[in-house]
Length: 278
Image (tube, rainbow, N blue to C red; front, side):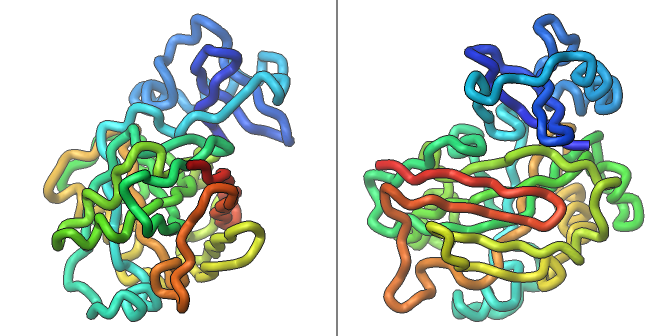
């Protein structure tokens, strides 16, 4: 099953993506957005209601960030061995975490904004986990029960601001500097996430290409760790880190500029595509 958050005209709603069509929920649907669907445990019910509707006219629809109102967006840094090497770091003993704020993310197809205060705006393609039910102090073997599905995240990074201190937050939260989507893919549609492949392209050129299996901390380890220090709730997002090939590590560095297009593709999940604007 694939579910998206979308604007139909000026009405925000949840939509089922199926057989190349998009079926929005009708006005008056009982759930306030995708986070509400997850909190109610109503994925199947929402999909059935969407299937009873007409497919949307694509010209009248735009995508919102997959979860427009997440309670938490937790991000794992330096989690792929090639990226750890290009960052000049050693593999960490524990996941390296930072947060993104909701207003730093846009939806599929919407423009990413180059931060006016930064001259080093970089790209990072990532697999993101969406939490489907409350989880606290959950064991690794039970992690699958709390995952609603997976999506793509473009973790746009102002590297100069990221390096101001040892904390990444300032470089990761400029408005509209990252994106989340295009849709949620439920686990039953995917093989083991470690078998998936991630590719990031700039203007069609492949910049990052890696197996999700190259992560230092896999999906169960990340969720177990995060759920040890905070209660994960439906609609929370955990992004799992980026592989090697980011712009700052290239010679010369490859920063994002207005007019670029960034695509993050994960096999079995989809392609998150965004133009870059000033």
